Image (cartoon, rainbow, N blue to C red):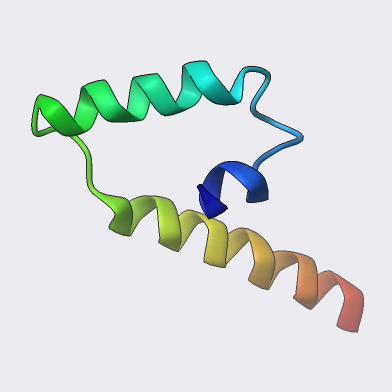
Length: 52
């Protein structure tokens, strides 16, 4: 849920997004690791731009 909130500007339908993630997880095609890393990198990039 936190990842959906972090991407709220990019996710047009949170319910649909969550259903898609659920379907991927049921099929064994989902891992939270890459999603967390992508959010971390995005935050790091934003922080680096603020420092410059």
